Image (cartoon, rainbow, N blue to C red; front, side):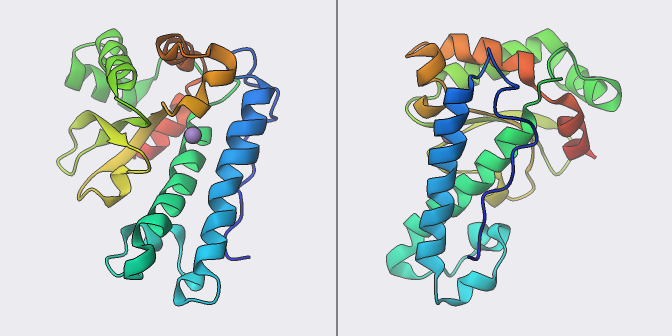
Amino acid sequence: MAFTLPALPYDKNELAPTISSETIDFHYGKHHQAYVTKLNELVAGTSLESKTLEEIICSKDLPQDKKIIIFNNAAQIWNHTFYWNCLSPKGGGQPKGALLASIEKQFGSFDTFKEQFSAKAVTLFGSGWAWLIKNKDGTLSITQTTNANTPLTEEGQTALLTCDVWEHAYYIDYRNARPKYVESFWKLVNWEFVEKNLN
Ligand code: MN3
């Protein structure tokens, strides 16, 4: 097997009640796993087997007939692994130090940043992701990507934080109430991971 499902950085029960173990069973155990299984099928016996996930996602010469499906599955593996790392049972609260300073410089205050990020997450039409990214010049931006799209392919962008707003991320715990899921998401944000990405 070329690609494997990375272990979660916590036990599947530990994010409850914000994210239930049932959601983890489906979102991590079924959806994230399915992207890994599918990518392995698609690259089996090709030169892509020896590439890293990042190389596949950023590749300009994927096989023409399978380009989109390979990209979608590879990018979804990367996005989900990044998302799980953005969460922690010990998360929530406020960032500290250099990260807090950067957020305050860019957005005026942490609360303003939270409001703007939440708005991007809630208003994204259809399936996708909300991101806090660092630009090449060191400024921060809040962006949306649809479907499997990822800042990894955007020149000069470094992903710092993401919120998965595909329905599968919240339907079990919040049904159709995406705003409630996004509001609860802040209770789990692993600011140490976000700070590590900034540096
Ligand atoms: Mn998802």
